[in-house]
Amino acid sequence: MSRFLRPGYQGLDAYTPGEQPRVKDLIKLNTNESPYPPSPLAVAAVDKQALEDARLYCDIGATALRRAIGAHLGVDPDWVIPGNGSDEILSWLFLAYGQNGAAFADVTYGFYRVWAALFGVDARIIPLEADFSLNPAAYMGDDRLVVLANPNAPTGLWLELSQVEAIVQANPHQVVVVDEAYVDFGGQSAARLTQTYSNLVVVQTFSKSRSLAGARLGFAVACPELIQDLGKMKFSLNPYNVNSLTQRMGAAAMADEAYFEQCVNRIVLSRDWTREQLLALGFQVLPSRTNFLFASPPDGGGAAYQQALRRQNILVRHFPGQRTAPFVRISIGTQAQMEQLMKVTKEMYSDA
Ligand SMILES: *Cc1c(COP(=O)(O)O)cnc(C)c1O
Image (cartoon, rainbow, N blue to C red; front, side):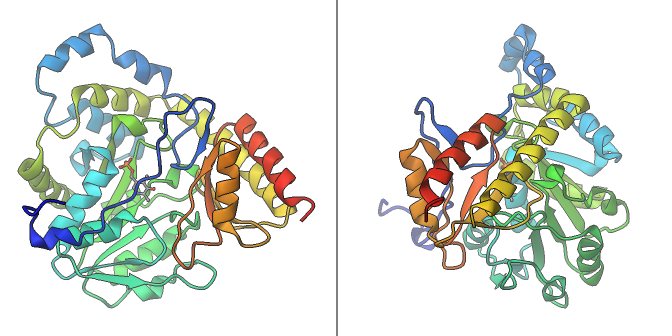
């Protein structure tokens, strides 16, 4: 750190992403990417013309992309704004609506704390219940921005749509954000509720279920007034936030429903298979409607399990916090990768 950094940022605890080593033959199950390539239509969308068009600024309104997203969700394109990953959208939301503070869970997406700290938003951290479930009543009767990941990470647990709606209804005077990064793997989206509630923002990403983590693309769905607020953030920070190649890939990926469903179905089958296998070995495994499992080995040694897997060239994520330390988060890879994970896991724990 230099002596020039603003004093207010010197103590900032920035987000720690999962590691991205460029090692061959690694089974990478640590950052919830898709093990499958993007839709062939998305790959074909980056043709020679698209590459040559990179000399021009991109479509600032992302018209074709917003139309594709709107068609998928059954909402008008004016109700959609894309971002450079859903991370960018979430940062706008803290910036735009954090004046009274923000409320979110103790065990949830680690970036929420970072944005709160960066933007001077007072964070009210609400502990999940002992079983990691979220009690909707804890998010009612406050005047803060409410931020829910549904399904939640790294637990994989979810709220029913009626519970999300109850939280939105109970907070008519502030914005409620539902971060649906994992909703395609079995959750119920609140996107249609935006048609009824003018305080609801639903955020989704192309990084997980659409295999475009590296292209950086996410979006918000909300009523046009809220979308205009977010547009103000975008035009004050980085108007050309979603590059032209990503816009093309995203529109094509969104339109290819058949490929999307095929990938999601495979991941869900491998997830449920892996969960059964881990349970049979005596692991504690939370139910999951995501593309990962939150699992604790029989001896509760999450860090030791992560390190043992690492020696076998399998990366999973360990979160050292007090409540999360007994667990690891295992992203769902291909079925062959999950079989390899179970093979080495059985060697570690079957005679324990
Ligand atoms: C992965 C993830 C994001 C960020 O996704 P990007 O679109 O890649 O920025 C946001 N929220 C949650 C809960 C996530 O797991």
